[in-house]
Image 1 (cartoon, rainbow, N blue to C red):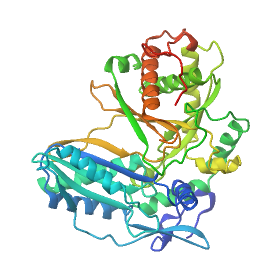
Image 2 (cartoon, rainbow, N blue to C red; image 1 turned 180 degrees about the horizontal axis):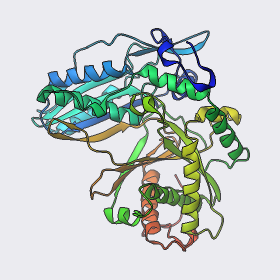
Image 3 (cartoon, rainbow, N blue to C red; image 1 turned 90 degrees about the horizontal axis):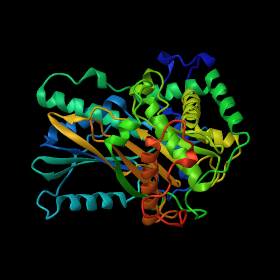
Image 4 (cartoon, one colour; image 1 turned 45 degrees about the horizontal axis):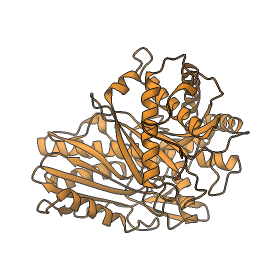
Length: 461
């Protein structure tokens, strides 16, 4: 592989016919999987409900074309003297698996049980196939695209635009014409090259300097569970979901400051909630970012996402306005340095043990995106397993329109019971609603913490 020093890679002279190095995101997964081969936390399972009839032949052809276009899912992994590697292999056009539950007494329940059964068989990182697809029939006009893949192949954002490209190919096949060019996918090799270029750049060094200075002195991770440790990844995370009404969304919308200020408000509310629950004044929240900067990362499926620690200070007497201004500043800094690998930061800070992290509670904001359609049929996205949940993760799903938000609270079942997780979910949504109603000059301490009828034992599990 010929390089051009710190200025980048000479793309035309890179030989991608053999083995490729792993991206930074992939490398962290590889290392953890070697230490914990039994873990299931990287086994991503999701499905897309298609509200209409589906042409299975056209669907298989669309899936095949999108897969060949990017090469992301036809990869094998191994390790040699130079370290772990990945190698593209010729795609195999295996027959599409189909499951028909339309005649079942309860098609939805039968389909859920089928998905759970599929997940019960682990995906082996050194195996021949690290992804799976199936078309599930629930009724004459109700189909489900079941997807399962190892997280080392793709992050969640990349999975979405791969699905969008499959839908574009499907539309072209059933209607005639060419797929929407705006959905075109890049090749995996380009994504790897962009990651290598970053790791050799001055920006990488600047990012490392920023993060190591910010956490030279650091707080202990804040957590809502009283259990010391769990065995994350062996059992599926538990989930408790709930809607947040449009009226609350409207109060957290700031037309003069752009969409980002809404996410600043939610993040500020979560920081304030954690501070109030634990009495901690200096805390971190894991914040998920796509890291996709540049042409290749923007349109190429692969694993490059990152979860970085957002550090927030909440001294006594801090107002809602002061907190939001601080979070906005820190979030801007985080986004400016978002490509620096979290696992590399842990090594820089000598946090190399399993339980040594900068944050344990994380927030993943999933802004509204135009829904994927197959032909004229709209779709609804569902997740069976989001991915790694060390402790507690909060997912905000914006479904667009006037439908409000959906919050998914996912937790390690060895650290939280369903009852305790449900309590934290209800308590936070009540707090977020109260936060949205408060004036900017009001202090964080003045915001109601308890839900109606609640009494002590806030930290009990």
